[in-house]
Amino acid sequence: MEVTVGVASFQGDVEEHLSATREALKRVNVGGRAVTVKLPEEIEAADALIVPGGESTVMGRLSSHTKALDALRRKILAGTPVLGTCAGLILLAKRVYDRVVGETGQSTLGVLDILVERNTYGRQRDSFEALIDIPALGLREYRAVFIRAPGIIETGENVEVLATLSGRPVAVRQRSILGTTFHPELSESTAIHEELIRLALLQKSR
Ligand code: GLN
Image (cartoon, rainbow, N blue to C red; front, side, top):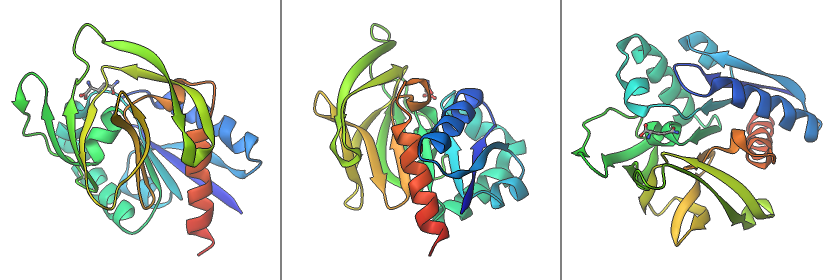
């Protein structure tokens, strides 16, 4: 079985996700491809989706994306596995506010039942790396890269916390929705992308 992984290319670190996905496909020995998706029909054709990091306000605001965002929401609600990273996680979240400015009024897809605080680590810790354990994926001391990362403040009852840093969730899963506050596309390990591919295979074989 082959899988097509679509990386939403509205804005943000698209190239890194394409290469991480291609590497992950090789490592799990699954045929398929990683492509950029922007148009509703491209989104429709994907077996799994990635919403990259970047600027969540920009991604949500561009009205030219409205149809694409609708398509994305429809696909995710229909069970297509999706990985949202950093700003991509913010775009998936049900509720969001900014640590400094408070309510942002930004529109999100609202499919992942979490409350997210943007820029939670502030200026002093703009970017940093940390070693985290992700037991559900069999990972110990996974090197996670955080860049102006958001914080997950609350999780709904259907949301499983996969990893924490200083007691706060940094990776979560709600059915086939995976979210990280860090950037798995910048790690040596492609484990998170591999998990997305596994979910895609599972969904496809149903
Ligand atoms: N701070 C950005 C936002 O809130 C996210 C940063 C990132 O994706 N690296 O949209």
